[in-house]
Image (cartoon, protein in one colour):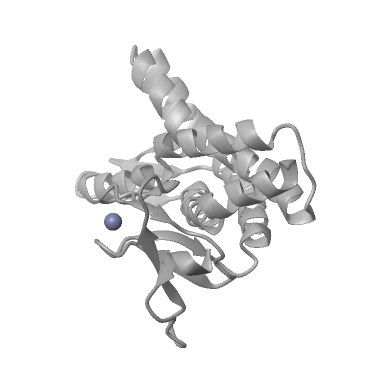
Length: 222
Ligand SMILES: [Zn+2]
């Protein structure tokens, strides 16, 4: 609430300093200080008074942006699975790799655990997270209460920790540098599609402010 906010709001950089409150309902992610954050307007952010961590930020049209990025991410993820990801060329031999084929190859080479982990962290969990973002953002943007809102929000913030799309794309880039010394690497359409997916995925999740989501769910269910 307004009385729970200290410091001035800068004109150029809308920022509010959240007030430490005994038994407050939000804990700072960085330093665990209990805070009271409320009444943020669009385009404002609340920062922790102790460590400066952004506890909550309410972007403009956050729900609509989350929806748009989630749909774009789903399209890019689909494309990433259809086209070649990489081609390797050495001594006249060419080998083409797609994302599903690389997982199947891992499985068939006896690395079933790694194949399962790759399938889960690179494809299934990110796809599920995008589904959950859409399932939350659409009803919230329309102001409609739906029975799946609460379980979806819980599941989304739990699962999101286990989504490793961006780690994967960085890993691929690092290994490309190594492989590039041994063979000619041709980057396929799927690589760019997956890179675009990672950007849209990150944008979708970050557009959906955790506190705003819970506030809206609370408001709609009361
Ligand atoms: Zn803090």
